[in-house]
Length: 258
Image (cartoon, rainbow, N blue to C red; front, side):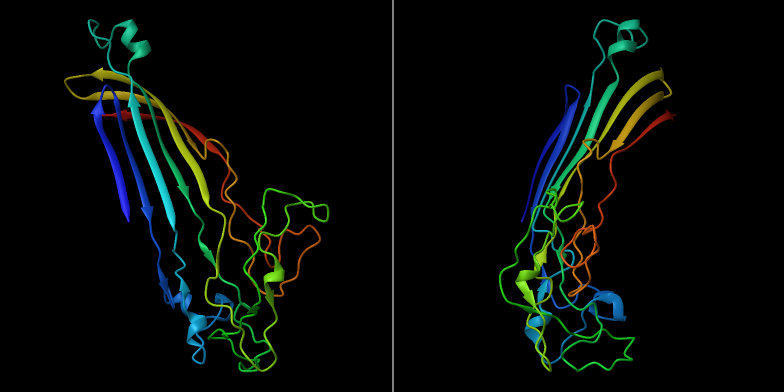
């Protein structure tokens, strides 16, 4: 489902607001996502079709994007090159705000052999379909909250929701059982336009660009390799988030339009 509201340019302001609700499920979202390569995740399980089916790797349930542009207009009664218009007109503020829920994460043995005893130890092309047993609903923590045991945040996904697959059998965890942290990002531009020649459409623009202007921490998905060890600071291992997207980045630029 898609909904959009758009305002045409008037009084120097235009914007577009869009919302998307989507849900996609499959047994493989791409060739690389189908288990080729031992480190690619789980392989396709020909004996348990229910574990192959789940949210697509690109499944984002909710996404809201707001993109406004405002340009201060010319002051009537004054020429484009008058001091008052040079000082007040031609200022431009624009941005793109994105709010979205997170991408799915899978839980598996990362394609390596395990307790099912189905994959040979020398397998190195097609990933094993081994997955742990899911014994309870996924319990998520707040990645912004630190624990006394770790210098960084505690686990985003609790290990109590899963258990080792039984010896000689496959686990029951279906594909992509959970979603990671969402997106809260705003990019902004503050610019000043100087008209140099109205007849030739020439102008100079000085612009300050800032990505993630509010410097929100954009957490990546947690580690989801079952039984992966946890480092002393908790920065890696199953359920822990060990990386983020880029922090605020700002640059000053100039453009000449002709």
